[in-house]
Structure formats: structure tokens, C-alpha cells
Image 1: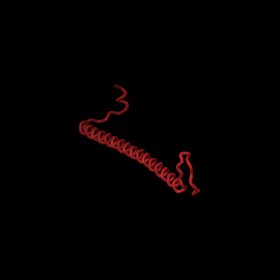
Image 2: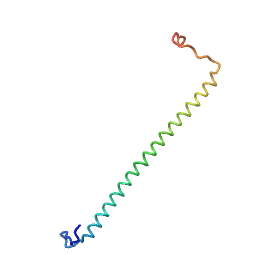
Image 3: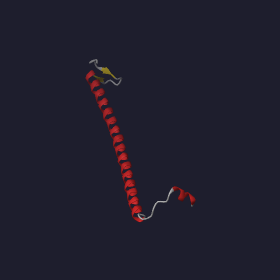
Image 4: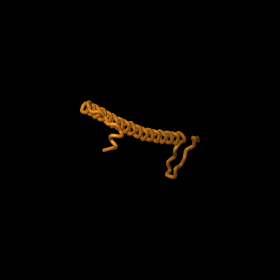
Length: 88
């Protein structure tokens, strides 16, 4: 990197150190922005997975409860053979 002043056509001269500082600043800003975007994506993905798992757990509880009620309601009723069910 050159340390000679640079003329940007507006009469203002920038040193190599200033140009380097600007380059580092732009790089850090871009990296911070990218990290923020990735964090948002990961946060949304974790939320979506938690929502899906919560929905699954609700379904499992409902199935378990329905199964329990069915076994209580029909505990004395034998399950008909397949052939008997087809005759109806």
C-alpha cells in the first residue's frame, strides 16, 4: 500500500493510511451486516423448528387422549375379524 497522497479530483488529498482505514472500515461494516443477516436467518429457523415441534407435541397429546378415551369407551367390545367387517 502506497503512503503517497492521492488526489480524488476534488482537491482533497488522502494518505495511504486514510485509504487503508476506509478500506478496513468498509470491510468491518460489510462483515457486521452479513453477521446480522445470518443471525436473523438462524433465529427465524430456530423459531420455525420450535413451532413445528410444538405442533407435533400437540398432535401426540391429542392422539394419546383419543386413544385413552377409545379404550375406556370400548374396553368390553371385541374387535371384529377382517372377514366380518367386509361382510357388512
